[in-house]
Structure formats: structure tokens, C-alpha cells
Image 1 (spheres, one colour):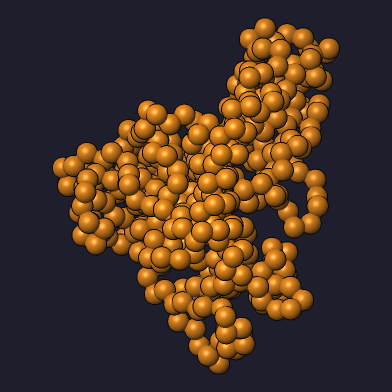
Image 2 (image 1 turned 90 degrees about the vertical axis):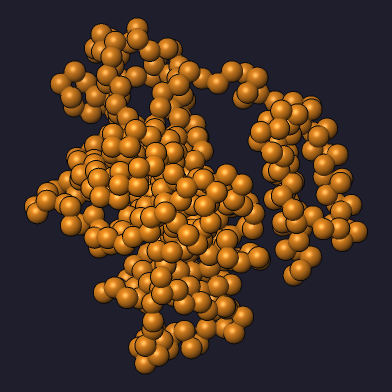
Length: 420
């Protein structure tokens, strides 16, 4: 049985399907109280692993166990843009309760957009998701490349000025006016309010949609992430966090502290991919001369501020901590950001073959594939089918798979160019 959870503060939607079961007929579909009902009053930790585990235990006891079906896969959505610590807490809670190590956890608005994309035969384009039902308006900015990827570019909450500033920063608003394709509204909007007047003044080319049950779109988008053969897009985001590396002395006092040079501002991070954050040399450890018998390094994650300011170590727990003898570590090691597992992992440096010059075979395959793509586009052939080889085909090498993915993305861009 495959389970999806749209986890929220006030309410949660839980749904589950057996293998091959139609989307419209789940084995379980229920709306229940949210996580805030399970947080102890005065608990400073908020949504900690303890609270998550208590909540997942409740879901398992009340809904999953009575079905008498084994849970084979889980996908969950969290509000906002959750960082590594929050996602890792949820992953550990699910592993402890359900025994599953590999679980998909994505931002709620990304899963929601994936659900909408499944309902449309054409690209959603650049879209805004606006929730005006709360005390202040909440807006998500996303872009879609059909059949390839959905990207969460930013979130904001506040009044019209805050939203316009964020939209201008992301290119959704320029000197000529609003610059996006679709607007999704969660709930009804009074035409006499400021929001209603803003909607009335939008350009006619902007397609406006009302969704009165966004949790349904979230569950559909999550289901596509864990169900084989469903045409789900890759989900990515412009990660709003920075990473800091700190070395500590024997007394636990920081002696060195700096930002890791990893550009999360402009790099789209796939929610299930791995990235190299940095390569470290133990010879650069500033504590080695003073205390050669011990190494204590820690990596912190901090949400990027709108205005520059110093990061304070007391703001959070480290997402990676290594404390050991220098002889226990290699001379050099890489720090790997695993988005799917919500971890930063130490790893031996990649081999020269992997990091070196691109092999000639790549360019040969790429040139022949690009020639076929150009010919198909000029002749107007139907090239809209998925050109990525099946991952289960033994005849397809990883190199050919990557080339096919690049060609598919190039074709999408060429189609957009030809239509414009």
C-alpha cells in the first residue's frame, strides 16, 4: 500500500492506495486534526522528532494498521520550505514507526502544483499560488517545464507591498506589469477587498483558477512521486538556506566560522538529488596546531535573510557534526548534501574519472541526438513523448540516459520558442 500525507498545522489529509488501485478510489481518504493538536503546550521544540513520531504513531494506529495492508511507500508534504533539520525529523519518525528508510518529503506547494500539472495536458508555465484566507496573504512562485521539472522559486507572506517586492525580485513583475501565466487561488475572494480589486486588474492573458480543495491536488501530486509509471515531474526548488562551516576547540568554543561557497541562491536543487557542498582538507583545520589530538567540525544551516546579517551559532543545532581524532579522517573529504535523505554526509573525494574532462563518447552521443532533435523539430514531427530511456532497460547506459534527458529539455525550450 502506498501512503501520502499532506501534513498541516490545523488539518492533515491522509490517503492510501493499493497496487493498481484507481486514483479516484483510494483505500483510505480522511481529513483529520493537524500537527498543532499534538504539540505539547509550551513545547519550545515545536515540530520536533518527538512530536512527529507521536503523530505518525497516531495515524498508523487509527488508520493504517486497521487496513491490514503493508505500507510499501510513503510521500509527505510539509508547509513552507522546510529545512534539513525539520525534514530529517519527519523521516526519522516515519522510519521508527513504519520501518521505511526511503520516504519522499517535499514542500506542500510543490506537491500541489504537481497535482495540478497532472490534470492539464499543457504546461502550467510560470504560476503564482495565492492563499488569502489567513490573516495575511501567502504567495508561492513556481515555474513548470512540462514532463521535466516543477520549480518552487520562492515564498512570501505579507501585504501587497511585500508580495510585489518578492514578485519583482523573481521576475514575476517588471516595468511592463505582471509577468506570469496562471494564478491559483485557494478559496473564495471578495471582489470588494484589495485582493479582489487586484484580481480584476490582472492582464487578460493570466489564467485564474480557484481551488476549494487544494489538499486533493497535494495528494495527487504526492502519489505521482511514489507510484511507478505515473508521469510525475521532477520537483526542485531555489533553496532558501545557506550553509556554514565551524571548527571548535577542545573547550567547545568556535575558532573558525565561514559560509560554504555553495550557490543555493541561483541553483535549482532537485528534492531527491545529491550535491557536493564543499571539499575539505584536514590540513586547513585551524585547531590542528593547537590541539592536534582532536578535530571538531560542524555544519549549520540557516534560512537566508532578506537583509545581510551575521549568523549566530545559538540559532540552531548542526546538521552535521564530526568530532574525532585526525587519524580517523582522510586527508581530504567531500561534504555531500543529500536532499532526499535530508542529510549532509562526509564522503571520500570523487575519482578523477568522475570529476575530470567530459569523455568524448558524451559529445558523440550528444551530437547525433541533437541532430535528430533538430530534424524532428523542423519537420514538425511529434516529439512530445517522453524521450528518456527506461531506467529498467539494461541496454541504456547512465550516459545515454543523461543525454536523453538533456535533449528532452532542449526540445521543450525549442517548442516554447517556436510557439512564441
